[in-house]
Length: 125
Image (cartoon, rainbow, N blue to C red; front, side, top):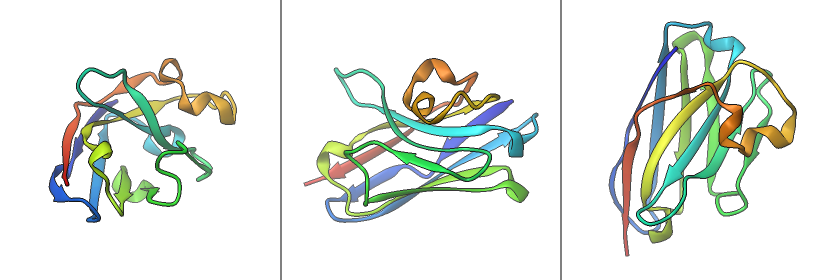
């Protein structure tokens, strides 16, 4: 499956952005989907995930500010980001997993089989 993330950009602190990740070449509804981010000098970190059953999981740092959702008819997963902070600045990437290994697996990079190119988000103070 191929994944393409888009929707990044420059936004002021307190603002909002919505990222999209379009999937092609696979049975999208059967995949669990995740968002990860990486900022300069830091390791890639988990942001949010949504299972094929629509359960959602979030990193503590974004809980209450970000919302992940999916539209299986459009083969797309979304990340609505509100109340953005400068520390949210990063390249955001989406990923897909064919299997459900349980709730705690979704925050782990090794869970995911497919990765898309990232989209850059810059939050100015």
